[in-house]
Image (tube, rainbow, N blue to C red):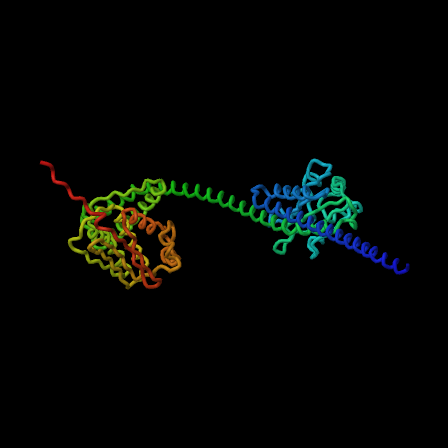
Length: 478
């Protein structure tokens, strides 16, 4: 019998062990499933938050509200609050979003008229630890004032508005700076808050911190863009007002200057009687100066016409070689007084081309005048007009100060002047080369420009003879 009893006990023990194993496996499966559910909940929340931020063009406040609503919809937390900086430039951290399933109020929790704001002097905000639990049921309004801005009465009202016993606060760090604070409220006491809830809030805080930082950067960028647009609009208005003034002033100045130039020319030509050599020298300088002023005013008017779309090219048959000779004749006295050698060998039998004579004269005068002003005494300036098989070229070659390489790409911009040119000639306008390029391109030509600082510059242009050929007159019909 004893043997029979022993044999019957073994299967019973095995069955008990099996039951214990099954129960253990069941508990482990339950535990793993619960962990998996928590992980899935966290991942789902993170996806929702990412989607809210990436797809939303709403304000920072609305994004904060959407984030807190997403958290309360996925959890059973009675309160979620999101404090954030209003911008990277401010130290103020205020409640911008909140959500609660059993929240009693209809408005955002406030202290007075303003949303809740964290007290920036709170030691916890500057401490290395990133989270803390606060037991609100044991926290007096006076103690709350260590953490929140506002009066004691406002703190008392805020405590009554929040139907929770404990809040869990997590600082949102991004690039080693606090951009906000995530707050979760619980009905339970501080020592009864589940570890899984703490872990969930901690995991969400990283993603929410990055989301807030990105939104702050985006809004700051939008503010800067808006300010730039306003500034640009004001600058455009000022630019238009300036152009209108320049146009009006130029029109008013052109007539008397043209008269002055005409009267000086009459005296030089002897219409008023004979003049001495000294008088002729002074009158030639006066004539050259008035001519430069007339061309400057023409440049100002052309700039105004470019803006209004009234800049036109009026081509007529022109002998470029003769025009260059005439314009340089006005500068001989100026070059001589500056001890400069002005060299020009006029080519023979130069072809006529369809060019805007007035604008080409201005252009030649500008190139030659610049060469004279920016070339040191004792040097030479050569002007070349070349008739190539397919093209014609003009080059004004000086031994002057040259243009720094770093500034050459700006040289033909409106109102731009190289640094060394401003020092040598402070009264320049920066319009001559700008208009020269416009005139050349408008007539189908190409600009010639070469320069080396301290050695000199070459300015000029090239035109296709075929494009600017003078049309032949057709024979009259019989």
